[in-house]
Amino acid sequence: MVMQHSEASSVTAPPKVVAKDVNVHYGEKHALQNVSVEIPDRAVMSFIGPSGCGKSTFLRCINRMNDTVASARVTGRITIDNQDIYDKSLDVVQLRARVGMVFQKPNPFPKSIFENVAYGPRIHGMSHSKADMEEIVHTSLGKAGLWNEVKDRLDDSGTSLSGGQQQRLCIARAIAVNPDVILMDEPCSALDPIATARIEELIDDLRKNFCIIIVTHSMQQAARVSQRTAFFHLGILVEEGATPDIFTSPKDKRTQDYITGRFG
Ligand SMILES: Nc1ncnc2c1ncn2[C@@H]1O[C@H](COP(=O)(O)OP(=O)(O)OP(=O)(O)O)[C@@H](O)[C@H]1O
Image (cartoon, rainbow, N blue to C red; front, side):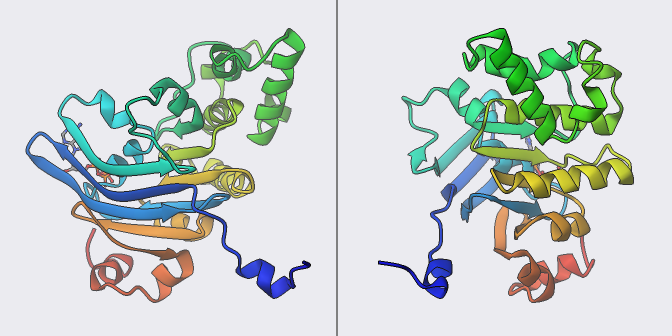
């Protein structure tokens, strides 16, 4: 049966990441309370909210980075492509390959530009020859918008690049293992406006192929780069929706107060 255009566009893709009743405690502190949300594929979702509201805590649940915090206790359920990522049989190393992360401060390895990108594919056995690996490095740097700037200096140290280039190198490193999801924790906060604009363009480009989740303190950035936005306050996911709706007609007074600058 041939679908009419209107029918086809009304078919919604299944969400990539689904969180249900996620709670996080750090010792006695209840940092995240009953967070449930569905995060679409091939789109950018922003997490916004005042400092300490739990945005990064929730982000770190999605690649199980909170496992490394001794006092952290995570309950509830998170699935990626319907697979429970807290299932006891799940290999956390494999999960971290499926869920890439880009941090606030660019953190290239103290190795060559080439090695920064090749490292992940090598440890995950993704290339079978030198030519294979060169192809992966070339493609990843290309997708990260860095190839032309570094193609003649692949043996230079990653740390010799500018801050913005280092962050794009970290994005190339994240996408080299072909992840399902890319988490970005304030990826532009250490960058100048020009480098920030380049990363934002890159995020917009990458969303064609990935599910991207970005924590940002900048509402302008959330409005520019994301299709959906979730607003957190005091450990609660107050409201989530299409980005224009959150910024123009929020349903909750706390969201309204935050976006109009009354607190935070
Ligand atoms: N490792 C930790 N140990 C104890 N408490 C923590 C830890 N990490 C975060 N918290 C607490 O959990 C709460 C949520 O912190 P989180 O970093 O997720 O907030 P955030 O919204 O990302 O803040 P910011 O915007 O300032 O980065 C805060 O009260 C914070 O102090």
